[in-house]
Image 1: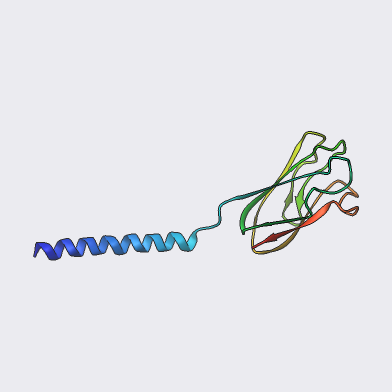
Image 2: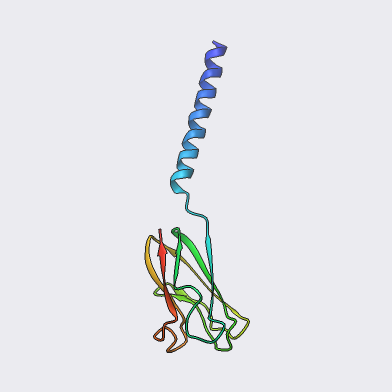
Length: 122
């Protein structure tokens, strides 16, 4: 009788542990992703990358600004970082689903002149 009780307890524990692991896996999200870009050092209205790719979930884009012009980074419809001068860093964070998004500089005229790119979220 003791052997059956021990087996039942071990089996129940294994099922509970397996159920917990399965529920954790089902709700698991990709780890937070941080992407780094920079403004063009020479002052051209562009980023050093025109496309970025990452997994869905919480995403941060950090833009360093080595240029003498002020710049920022934003994700269209999802938020924007502050406008920074030379040596500054602009950061935007958003939780994104799979899809394609536009990242750009919010300084008037910069995006229209080409300071933008495509963020692909898988």
